Image 1 (tube, helix red, strand yellow):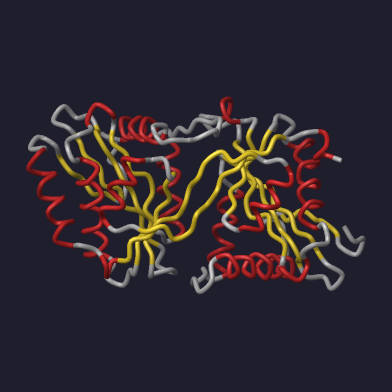
Image 2 (cartoon, rainbow, N blue to C red):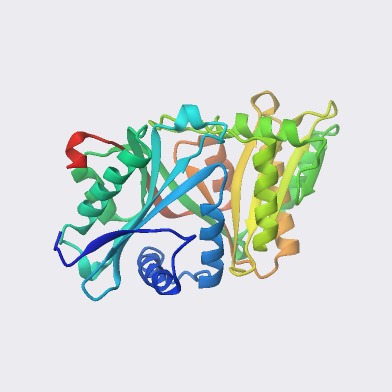
Length: 349
């Protein structure tokens, strides 16, 4: 890397306004390249989210910038790591999640990406010595080539899928909702912004069960959520003005059988993000997955009339959910490949 470039740590909690502007300029330029034509959050809101992530008791972020001879940020990267308070820390503490490693087009082919990655790994060797591998998402061909050159292994084919509401078959969606109710007469369907206290423990268990039923390919990790994490997330949504909705089904014996959730950001009123949708194994083949998705879409149509599309992420190998999404009209918008990169002495040089 040219000596005129230097790598610095970016701490959201202590960065001054000038450094924040460099950070925004670089990360927004990359976002425009990888998401052409997509609206962006206002900088004040993005800063708010970054500060919230930095204060998360369950996870921590390490951010880095490469500053060029003109003082501008030419590249950036950040790593997510679990804190010991996370319920999956012991299972996942060997994994660092590397996101947003990007170099501006005018500064490419100068070794900045490789130099930044090696700097990040050396920093992690000091701060997170338990890391033995990185999980790295890539949505751009240049990223695929970069990771292949480093010896990263493709672990999971993933992607963002979108349903444009103007193309939705609302008669079918209403039929799915009605049929789901008819087939499950003893099952309650609840739509809430916060999980009721009476249900929160079983909801957390149902979420953990269903999220770990998803195909994870070669990813060596486990996911879990606790009632405390749910309450923390709900509080953060309220603080940031995000509108979170959960639809879930509860059986006559009080046990939760399925769930789905969305987040709506008033600052990006064109989109709703759909989160995990899952049905516990013992309650499958009753149309609950279709019922949950249909009820959520009807909620979106009613509550957010300005929304243009619903976006969700799915593993390509998740056949049951892909079948439901395909029937609803979701289309692949952007493929995302998840790689694992073993941290070797060679990479630390």
